[in-house]
Image 1 (cartoon, rainbow, N blue to C red):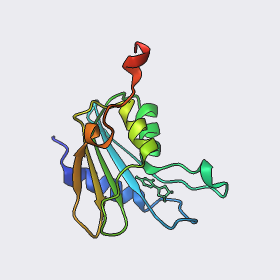
Image 2 (cartoon, rainbow, N blue to C red):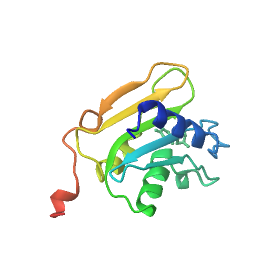
Image 3 (cartoon, protein in one colour):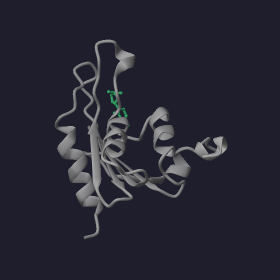
Image 4 (cartoon, rainbow, N blue to C red):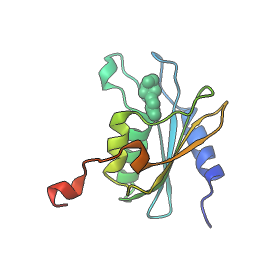
Length: 134
Ligand code: THU
């Protein structure tokens, strides 16, 4: 069965409910459709030592790798508010490790309209594994 954006949205929203964000109160969910056809999701996990917090996208990537998949086919990110919750710079690079430039990233502040971008638009002229011969 084809995975729809509605399914990815629901997966991101379901895991967003588990976000641990007592400092920012900004709860984020991310759902990845991977090359094995499965959906891997993650939420942000903050820390009292602020820089040690994890973004939702990083958590979802960790779940994907732990689950045995290797390539990202589509990403859906949800968060509060009207503005699209776009991945931070670090997460764009994290996604880059496992996704081609034409992969779609949907950024959605759930009170607003989803924004569809490609990874190449979010992170142009990027550095990746092939630079290291991988
Ligand atoms: N955050 C994410 O998890 N993903 C994003 O795409 C944007 C920001 C988190 C990090 C931090 O826990 C909180 O949102 C506020 O920046």
